[in-house]
Length: 128
Image (cartoon, rainbow, N blue to C red; front, side):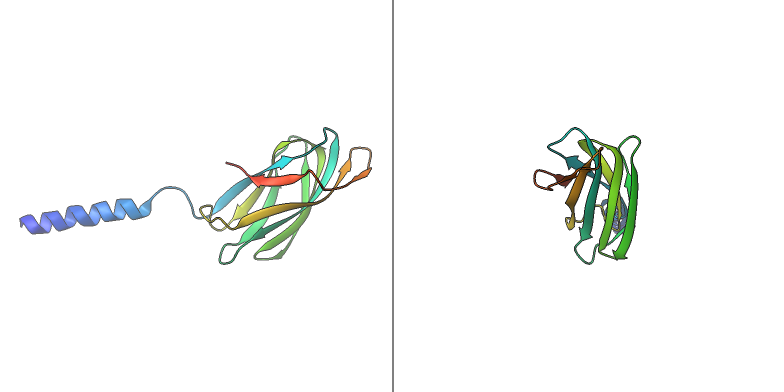
């Protein structure tokens, strides 16, 4: 009987270890780095490295809206508009939050007065 109890305890411990916490799916926060304080729009592309996927994007900055199009399981393009400021900007819905294969690129930007800006100095980096 004693070996049976040991096996049961080991099986339970193995189950607890493999259940681990959080990932797979959920949102990854991307933080905006900007050289300006009066951005009104940021055009972006979000990508995943297969087998990871991306399926949606939400705006995280106060008063901002995001308009996006899912091009494939691994690519979304969109525009974040509003009072766009540095800090948490996008919540990207992903298949596995533990994966390292997600990136976002700022393609273009504009001021709140619609003046186009060079994308140099802008970045979207994965945060918490």
